[in-house]
Length: 85
Image (cartoon, one colour):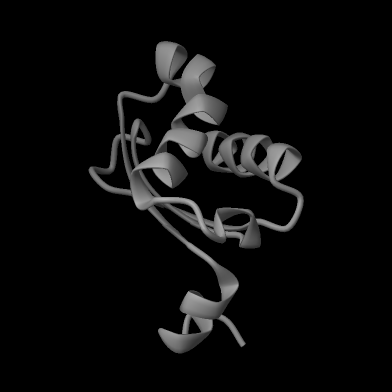
């Protein structure tokens, strides 16, 4: 769980309004599913949103994260999907 907490803190330190959810995709703690909800994504293309997260994680990807599956959205979109209130 330390990796999850470190990744979450890293994202939140770069995106102060972020709601971050991390899951272990393989049971090995190095393939992560990361969902980031932030209004900083407003008006930004999906590919660019994912690149923002990859840029934040680039050093961790060199060390202890092998792969990530990223989902990004604004709070408005997350509310419509029932993910946040």
